[in-house]
Amino acid sequence: MRGLRLGVLGSGQGSNFVALAKAIERDRIPAEIVWVGSDRAEAKILEHAKKLNLPRVVCRKSNFRTKLEPEIEEELALALEKARVDLLVLAGYMRVVKDPLLRKFEGRMINIHPSLLPAFPGLRAWEQARMAGVKEAGCTVHWVNSQVDGGEILRQETVPVLAGDSAESLHGRIQEAEHRCLPQVVRGLAEGKIPWSEDPRK
Ligand code: GAR
Image 1 (cartoon, rainbow, N blue to C red):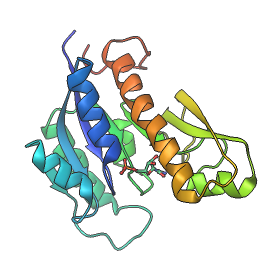
Image 2: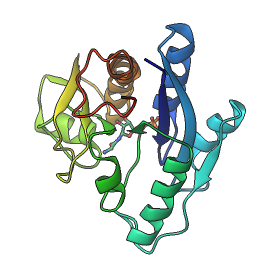
Image 3: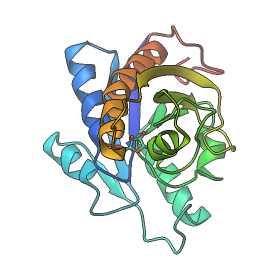
Image 4: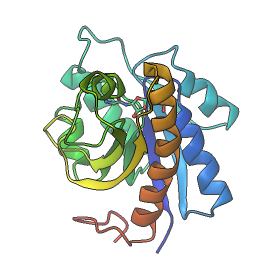
């Protein structure tokens, strides 16, 4: 089977994008990042993508804070289709995906979330975990569906919450787990070891 063509969409620092790009090289994952996009022109993920000479797309400015207008999502979907992206990876994308992007990529879109879902969906999940006093936190990679952070879980990794953790120290520990977990899922999908509802390469 041919390698998986990946699109990565992110709003922020891009550490998951960097970890994924490195893992693909280092661990010979049969996948290739062919497209990087952001809803924020100043997002660091775009700088990282530039260093790797990858095509970058910034979507038009939105009037919403938590989602995109359908027309803007349509433009993103067209760009992804033009790049023949098989799997769209949400790596720190901070808006809710709606139609038409969801309709076009459901079953071919995964997200990384910084909690052990179904616990603590939504924003600043590590802070929610810390405030709740749980002893274990972690990350989840899941399929994206219309429920926010609610799609089928593909992989989770647990990390301890330590006495004296700040929001930043806990998020840092969770991110180390994310940087392992996301490439592992991409490998599983690329090698057909994690089942797809419909593998786009077939
Ligand atoms: C990650 O911790 C990711 O799980 C989280 O944003 C961070 C992005 O970091 N995503 C969400 O909270 C989505 N609801 P990165 O830009 O360095 O990869």
